Length: 232
Image 1 (cartoon, helix red, strand yellow):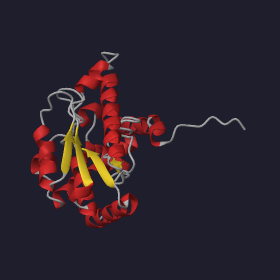
Image 2: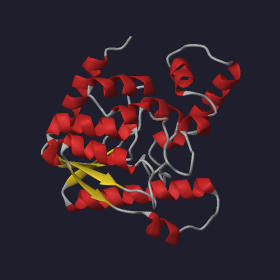
Image 3: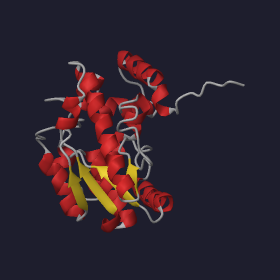
Image 4: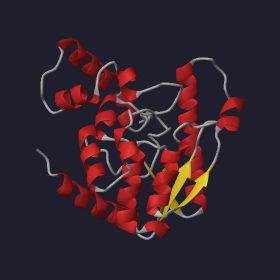
Protein backbone atom coordinates (compact mmCIF):
# COMPACT_ATOMS: atom_id res chain seq x y z
CA UNK A 1 0.00 0.00 0.00
CA UNK A 2 1.41 3.39 -1.00
CA UNK A 3 1.80 5.98 1.77
CA UNK A 4 -0.65 8.83 1.18
CA UNK A 5 0.94 11.11 3.76
CA UNK A 6 4.32 10.86 2.05
CA UNK A 7 2.67 11.59 -1.31
CA UNK A 8 0.93 14.62 0.16
CA UNK A 9 4.23 16.01 1.41
CA UNK A 10 5.96 15.40 -1.93
CA UNK A 11 3.15 17.04 -3.91
CA UNK A 12 3.15 20.11 -1.66
CA UNK A 13 6.92 20.47 -1.99
CA UNK A 14 6.68 19.91 -5.74
CA UNK A 15 4.11 22.68 -6.10
CA UNK A 16 6.29 25.09 -4.10
CA UNK A 17 9.35 24.32 -6.22
CA UNK A 18 7.62 24.54 -9.60
CA UNK A 19 5.43 27.57 -8.95
CA UNK A 20 8.04 29.72 -7.24
CA UNK A 21 6.61 33.18 -6.55
CA UNK A 22 3.77 33.02 -9.09
CA UNK A 23 0.04 32.71 -8.44
CA UNK A 24 -2.00 29.66 -9.44
CA UNK A 25 -5.48 29.38 -10.95
CA UNK A 26 -7.70 26.32 -10.59
CA UNK A 27 -11.05 25.56 -12.18
CA UNK A 28 -13.24 24.62 -9.19
CA UNK A 29 -15.86 22.27 -10.58
CA UNK A 30 -17.46 21.06 -7.38
CA UNK A 31 -15.80 17.66 -7.79
CA UNK A 32 -13.20 15.95 -5.63
CA UNK A 33 -10.21 16.27 -7.97
CA UNK A 34 -10.32 20.05 -8.30
CA UNK A 35 -11.07 20.38 -4.59
CA UNK A 36 -8.01 18.32 -3.67
CA UNK A 37 -5.79 20.31 -6.02
CA UNK A 38 -7.02 23.55 -4.45
CA UNK A 39 -6.38 22.27 -0.91
CA UNK A 40 -2.87 21.10 -1.86
CA UNK A 41 -2.04 24.41 -3.52
CA UNK A 42 -3.19 26.39 -0.50
CA UNK A 43 -1.10 24.17 1.74
CA UNK A 44 1.90 24.79 -0.52
CA UNK A 45 1.47 28.48 -1.32
CA UNK A 46 -1.00 29.97 1.14
CA UNK A 47 -4.50 31.26 0.31
CA UNK A 48 -3.45 34.63 -1.13
CA UNK A 49 -1.67 33.08 -4.14
CA UNK A 50 -4.38 30.56 -5.03
CA UNK A 51 -7.36 31.66 -7.13
CA UNK A 52 -10.45 29.61 -7.90
CA UNK A 53 -12.36 29.99 -11.14
CA UNK A 54 -15.96 28.74 -11.24
CA UNK A 55 -17.21 28.18 -14.78
CA UNK A 56 -20.74 26.75 -14.84
CA UNK A 57 -22.56 26.14 -18.09
CA UNK A 58 -25.77 27.99 -17.22
CA UNK A 59 -27.26 26.64 -14.01
CA UNK A 60 -24.91 24.29 -12.15
CA UNK A 61 -26.73 22.03 -9.71
CA UNK A 62 -23.73 21.59 -7.41
CA UNK A 63 -22.41 25.16 -7.47
CA UNK A 64 -22.70 25.19 -3.67
CA UNK A 65 -19.98 22.53 -3.52
CA UNK A 66 -17.68 24.75 -5.58
CA UNK A 67 -18.41 27.66 -3.27
CA UNK A 68 -17.83 25.53 -0.17
CA UNK A 69 -14.27 24.85 -1.34
CA UNK A 70 -13.30 28.48 -1.94
CA UNK A 71 -14.97 29.59 1.30
CA UNK A 72 -13.34 26.91 3.43
CA UNK A 73 -9.92 27.74 1.94
CA UNK A 74 -10.59 31.51 2.09
CA UNK A 75 -9.28 32.03 -1.42
CA UNK A 76 -10.38 34.67 -3.91
CA UNK A 77 -12.52 33.34 -6.74
CA UNK A 78 -14.02 34.43 -10.03
CA UNK A 79 -17.25 33.13 -11.55
CA UNK A 80 -17.91 33.07 -15.28
CA UNK A 81 -20.92 31.52 -16.98
CA UNK A 82 -19.56 29.85 -20.14
CA UNK A 83 -22.99 29.20 -21.70
CA UNK A 84 -23.13 32.38 -23.87
CA UNK A 85 -19.65 31.65 -25.25
CA UNK A 86 -20.21 27.93 -25.85
CA UNK A 87 -23.65 28.39 -27.42
CA UNK A 88 -22.27 30.96 -29.84
CA UNK A 89 -19.80 28.42 -31.24
CA UNK A 90 -21.98 25.32 -30.93
CA UNK A 91 -21.76 23.70 -34.37
CA UNK A 92 -23.11 20.21 -33.68
CA UNK A 93 -25.89 18.58 -31.64
CA UNK A 94 -23.44 15.80 -30.73
CA UNK A 95 -23.04 15.85 -26.95
CA UNK A 96 -19.37 14.89 -27.10
CA UNK A 97 -18.57 17.76 -29.46
CA UNK A 98 -20.33 20.12 -27.04
CA UNK A 99 -18.55 18.60 -24.03
CA UNK A 100 -15.14 19.14 -25.61
CA UNK A 101 -16.07 22.70 -26.56
CA UNK A 102 -17.09 23.37 -22.96
CA UNK A 103 -13.80 21.99 -21.66
CA UNK A 104 -11.69 24.00 -24.10
CA UNK A 105 -13.64 27.15 -23.32
CA UNK A 106 -12.87 26.69 -19.64
CA UNK A 107 -9.18 26.21 -20.42
CA UNK A 108 -9.09 29.46 -22.42
CA UNK A 109 -10.79 31.37 -19.59
CA UNK A 110 -8.41 29.94 -17.00
CA UNK A 111 -5.43 31.06 -19.05
CA UNK A 112 -6.92 34.51 -19.51
CA UNK A 113 -7.12 34.95 -15.74
CA UNK A 114 -3.67 33.44 -15.26
CA UNK A 115 -2.10 35.71 -17.90
CA UNK A 116 -3.72 38.74 -16.28
CA UNK A 117 -2.40 37.91 -12.80
CA UNK A 118 1.05 36.48 -13.65
CA UNK A 119 -0.13 33.01 -12.79
CA UNK A 120 0.00 29.36 -13.76
CA UNK A 121 -2.94 27.08 -14.55
CA UNK A 122 -3.24 24.00 -12.35
CA UNK A 123 -4.65 20.82 -13.87
CA UNK A 124 -6.90 18.44 -11.94
CA UNK A 125 -6.55 15.08 -13.72
CA UNK A 126 -5.74 12.01 -11.60
CA UNK A 127 -3.66 8.99 -12.65
CA UNK A 128 -6.68 6.77 -13.33
CA UNK A 129 -8.21 9.31 -15.73
CA UNK A 130 -4.88 10.25 -17.27
CA UNK A 131 -4.05 6.64 -18.12
CA UNK A 132 -7.25 5.99 -20.05
CA UNK A 133 -7.42 9.46 -21.60
CA UNK A 134 -10.48 10.66 -19.70
CA UNK A 135 -9.78 14.32 -20.31
CA UNK A 136 -10.11 16.71 -23.23
CA UNK A 137 -7.03 17.41 -25.30
CA UNK A 138 -6.28 21.14 -25.01
CA UNK A 139 -9.21 21.37 -22.60
CA UNK A 140 -8.82 20.17 -19.02
CA UNK A 141 -5.64 18.54 -20.32
CA UNK A 142 -4.26 22.04 -21.02
CA UNK A 143 -2.40 23.30 -17.96
CA UNK A 144 1.01 24.21 -16.54
CA UNK A 145 1.26 21.54 -13.86
CA UNK A 146 -0.66 18.43 -12.74
CA UNK A 147 -0.44 17.95 -8.95
CA UNK A 148 -2.42 14.70 -8.68
CA UNK A 149 -1.56 12.94 -11.96
CA UNK A 150 0.33 10.22 -10.07
CA UNK A 151 -2.54 9.48 -7.68
CA UNK A 152 -5.07 6.76 -8.44
CA UNK A 153 -8.69 7.72 -7.85
CA UNK A 154 -8.87 5.77 -4.58
CA UNK A 155 -5.79 7.68 -3.39
CA UNK A 156 -7.50 10.96 -4.28
CA UNK A 157 -10.33 9.90 -1.99
CA UNK A 158 -7.96 8.92 0.83
CA UNK A 159 -5.98 12.16 0.65
CA UNK A 160 -9.17 14.22 0.48
CA UNK A 161 -10.34 12.67 3.74
CA UNK A 162 -7.01 13.47 5.39
CA UNK A 163 -7.27 17.11 4.31
CA UNK A 164 -10.87 17.45 5.55
CA UNK A 165 -12.40 18.24 2.18
CA UNK A 166 -16.20 18.64 2.56
CA UNK A 167 -17.92 15.25 2.92
CA UNK A 168 -20.58 16.18 0.35
CA UNK A 169 -17.83 16.40 -2.26
CA UNK A 170 -16.11 13.19 -1.17
CA UNK A 171 -19.36 11.20 -1.19
CA UNK A 172 -20.83 12.41 -4.49
CA UNK A 173 -20.67 10.31 -7.65
CA UNK A 174 -17.75 11.44 -9.84
CA UNK A 175 -19.00 13.46 -12.79
CA UNK A 176 -17.63 15.94 -15.29
CA UNK A 177 -21.04 17.65 -15.28
CA UNK A 178 -21.18 17.70 -19.07
CA UNK A 179 -24.89 16.88 -19.37
CA UNK A 180 -27.74 15.96 -16.98
CA UNK A 181 -27.12 12.78 -14.96
CA UNK A 182 -23.71 12.24 -16.60
CA UNK A 183 -21.24 10.26 -14.46
CA UNK A 184 -17.63 9.20 -15.05
CA UNK A 185 -18.31 5.53 -14.43
CA UNK A 186 -21.35 5.64 -16.69
CA UNK A 187 -19.08 6.92 -19.45
CA UNK A 188 -16.44 4.27 -18.76
CA UNK A 189 -18.75 1.31 -18.58
CA UNK A 190 -16.87 0.14 -15.47
CA UNK A 191 -16.09 1.43 -11.98
CA UNK A 192 -13.09 3.36 -10.71
CA UNK A 193 -12.37 0.49 -8.32
CA UNK A 194 -12.17 -1.94 -11.26
CA UNK A 195 -9.99 0.50 -13.19
CA UNK A 196 -7.61 1.09 -10.27
CA UNK A 197 -7.33 -2.63 -9.55
CA UNK A 198 -6.39 -3.36 -13.17
CA UNK A 199 -3.92 -0.46 -13.39
CA UNK A 200 -2.15 -1.83 -10.32
CA UNK A 201 -1.72 -5.25 -11.91
CA UNK A 202 -4.84 -6.98 -10.62
CA UNK A 203 -7.28 -9.07 -12.67
CA UNK A 204 -10.89 -8.09 -13.32
CA UNK A 205 -13.57 -9.08 -15.82
CA UNK A 206 -11.64 -9.98 -19.02
CA UNK A 207 -14.02 -7.92 -21.19
CA UNK A 208 -13.38 -4.85 -19.06
CA UNK A 209 -9.63 -5.50 -19.18
CA UNK A 210 -9.75 -5.41 -22.98
CA UNK A 211 -11.83 -2.23 -22.90
CA UNK A 212 -9.33 -0.51 -20.59
CA UNK A 213 -6.40 -1.62 -22.75
CA UNK A 214 -8.12 -0.17 -25.81
CA UNK A 215 -8.75 3.12 -24.02
CA UNK A 216 -5.09 3.35 -23.01
CA UNK A 217 -3.91 2.64 -26.55
CA UNK A 218 -6.38 4.94 -28.30
CA UNK A 219 -5.68 7.87 -25.98
CA UNK A 220 -1.88 7.77 -26.24
CA UNK A 221 -1.89 10.87 -28.45
CA UNK A 222 -3.41 12.88 -25.58
CA UNK A 223 -0.38 12.26 -23.38
CA UNK A 224 2.15 13.44 -25.95
CA UNK A 225 3.00 16.75 -27.58
CA UNK A 226 1.74 17.06 -31.18
CA UNK A 227 4.16 15.44 -33.64
CA UNK A 228 6.46 17.72 -35.57
CA UNK A 229 6.85 16.89 -39.25
CA UNK A 230 10.55 16.85 -39.99
CA UNK A 231 11.91 18.51 -43.15
CA UNK A 232 15.45 17.27 -42.65
